[in-house]
Image (tube, rainbow, N blue to C red; front, side, top):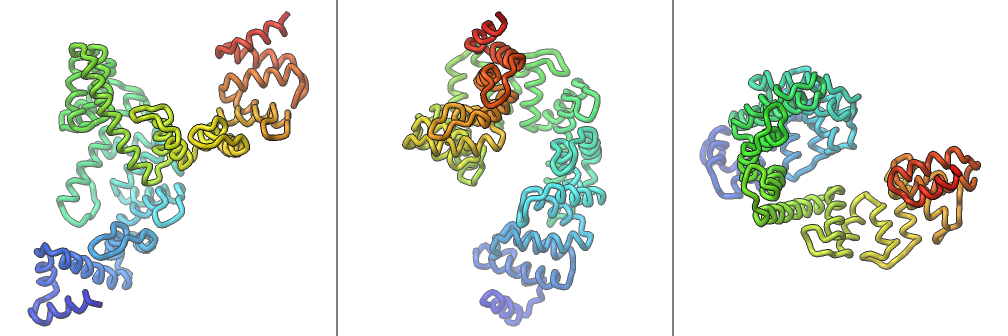
Length: 451
């Protein structure tokens, strides 16, 4: 191997110790030497890892996780070395292993196992693990949702931000990580007090925490503080303060602040009304959103793909293009949109059979509008044999989900006894529901039954 030969040659010719060689390579700017430095570290980590030294296994895993310096990224190998190290009791890799399980990195996603490893690391006072574990409890990922437990973890992090024990490669990285985690903990703690998550609601306490964080220059906190002044959360309404904070956070790239700033200009809140400035801000925001949606969509983000499909379909911030809309919808998991494009021939040749296939797939995933569409197709036999019983089942699902058209059709089936036993009482109930949601035909049907 050329890299090894070079290293051996340098040690022999220059009569250098290994430490001297590492120092020499570290001072080189030539990419070839940077590559060799990475290779040298890799060889050292590999040898120590094979001898079951857990800290070496951490760094070897990171070599494979990050790639670069002559090492190809390989998440499967990264996971394997993290697992060996974690099982030996290494706290850092217990956190890394939890992260791999949470996001499916090098292993099938398993949020229950991610919580197990986060808990192991958190028990050993790993702050990053505590932070992620709090999120798991807050959103019910791999564990029963528990706002109180999430609050306790976040509160502990906010109060003990200086006790971070992650043993990272250098002090600069350590300090930066401590700062990020402490900021995140304080911000989340403010949210807990604002919304009453796991603790008694206390908007004044939330205001104090966010104000303190905003004073340290955090853009998200500056936006949030502006919002508090805007809506009078934990403080008196102050539109001028809100405008100033939205402006500061916008300059730092906070898009939520930019949107709210546009509204300030549009309606003259805390500043003289300036609709031209409002439009400029919104156009700029749309351009940023489009850029990041495209980036995320290219990386397989299904939500971004779906949102881009909607933008192209409706011409929001881009020229209307139904062909592009169809392509983005097709890449995303929301099959109901693709069904509509096939049904109406938008961006693709009309094909009602294919429309039904995609509607059916989306309906079975729980999408209410798709459930109504499938019920409608079964009810009227569009490119398929009429099946009133299946129509009844899908209309029932969509009606319970709040779809007004499904509520009307379900009432009609009950009234006529199609796909189910005739039941005037249920027909009245669903006609009434649909009428309350603005369906005029339902009002007519209801009036006829009540005569």
